[in-house]
Length: 396
Image 1: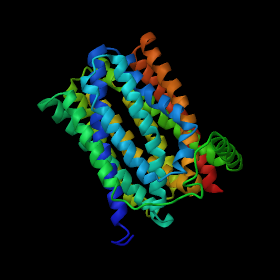
Image 2 (image 1 turned 30 degrees about the horizontal axis):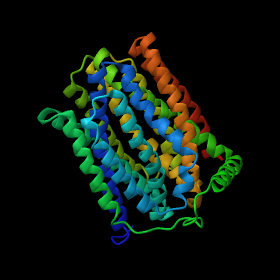
Image 3 (image 1 turned 180 degrees about the horizontal axis):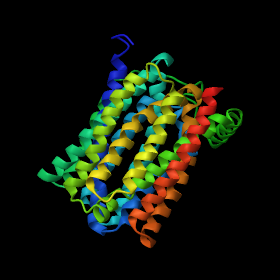
Image 4 (image 1 turned 30 degrees about the vertical axis):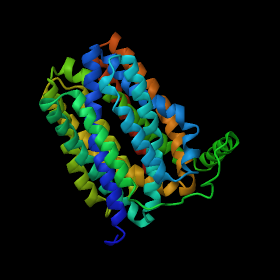
């Protein structure tokens, strides 16, 4: 990409980077807030159940909306809505009302994710997408490092509530940067009124497309299977750090920062590897090593062993995500990207909700470490299935 065509992708990367830094601050703050209020690992796991539940609620129709409206204006609106909702949380004392507000924040996020992905794909020429996705992983990794570090600073000089107020400003700034991006039209349906009949027709189109491209669906769901298990294991992260590793809040923040450093170095390496490695190779090799890192983490009893596992899984997460994003951009038509990614995402998040719920309940029957070990081994099995599948596709 030349200097002129880099202008808008750079704006997009800036908005994503700022939003992701805020996302890490928000994640750590809300997890610690709920854990301090309840003292329950299941209560924290409940936060991780809200996101997949939100995707279930909007998945059937969000894609139809995204493919019919201006994705730019939709993203701006959703950022403002999330900022307004987040502003309410510090003034709420009831854990159940906090859950409701978090649900609405996640509903907005469940629409924002496929809208943002659709807009990003439209913004970039096909030959530049793999390189841009590697840069996007670098931005995510920078947020992975800066977010927890900033959260730790905010926790030390202020409070959990201050961290949440910081995120309000982050969403507003993100909306401002998105407003500077160009207006892009991606579908012949843009401007058409959203109706139930239209939504039902969209379901039929996605179903027929999936039957034709079944190998793609298998790869997509296998990769998402690994990612939903990472989310499920993340729901145990706070309890694991407190009950198994016996870490303080600052030490827990530093553990996450170690993972961020791994993600940052992995993203740098990814930017080199994309020049001579295929998307399928990045996705397959990255996924199996992510699972390996989780296995090391799950068996850890010390900070050093846990940080080693965190570093490995985060290092290869950049490779896996870059390969996966590029893979689906090449296999999903832009005019149907919102509908396909939204409906597929709904299926994946439905499974994630069940897995998180099961792990949260299992943590009451077994030790937290036993639950995390079981989840990491299952992740490794799914990753092995994925790498066998993508290897066959690469041979073809």
